[in-house]
Image 1 (cartoon, rainbow, N blue to C red):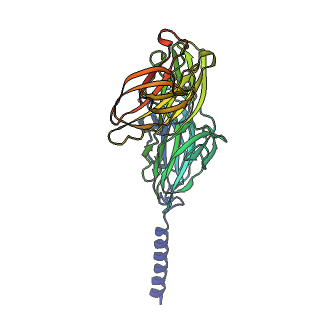
Image 2 (cartoon, helix red, strand yellow):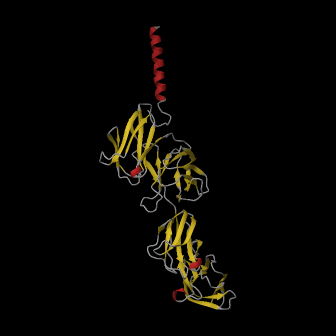
Length: 438
């Protein structure tokens, strides 16, 4: 009888131990039940050097560079001193913080701000994955960026995160796996600060999106978003890449001086843009951009325009009219390849004092008709070859300008524009200019 009671007691104890061992996952499904915690550090201070991270005075993470993550390091639960100093040095200590870490929990310490104002913010990382969705959260670590919304597709799209200000850490949101185009806008607005190329989010992956760098175009540290992977050892990441558009600017104001072109306050042409020249296509960040045209070498702005540029789209911007009334004319360029044996051609009337005109062959056959100032035709397929064209008054009778020997190459795309002034002299007289768009 005594042996039987002993056996039953032993069996109950064994079952208890077995149940306990099968329940050793904590609430984030990562750490087994123990007296340990996990901590990682992400360096987000854009002008700080590589750093060493000490835990209770001992270097635990060495030579951590900007935008790098240490991955998770296991430490005893409890209160620890975490200090940060330049790599290989014990001073100066730029961050000195006491952190209480609970057993079986995971944490990330983010070093944010510029070096003069560097500080640490801390998150508890709920890394339990979803079997069907991706989990994402957002950390705002760009010190000069306003509070932002993170939206899908465009500035009017659905917000995944709203009104996140510098040093904010959002909660995790579950989203279906798939490809996403994320857009950053000022909180509550639709202006697109940055549009990113599509990024793929996978089911079962836990992400921390971190905005870092600065919006100030005068420094060399660009605003950027990196998707850190919280699963596993926590040191994986993928960069968001900013989408671009292609913009060509043409100086078509006959009496305006040479100009500088500024995009979001930064001059993008290396030499003054003179009438009637073009920049060629420039890669410009997609989204809401400010364009200024200044008299070259001055701060005198003659055109100030806000444009919304779609990713991968091509645009032509013409500065038209006389200087006293100069204005931008913005065109979307359809650069679909011509059919075999064809070229695509469009015509723009950019002569401010010329009447409505037709473009004809020398025998009077109309190619483009009734085009008035600032009007542009669609790209039109024409057989490749050499053409003698004429600019005529809209009644088709009076030849205003002969255009002999216009060469249209197979597969090319052209913009032909009327330039100058009827009363212009020298380089400002009435004429045409041809741009090869592609």
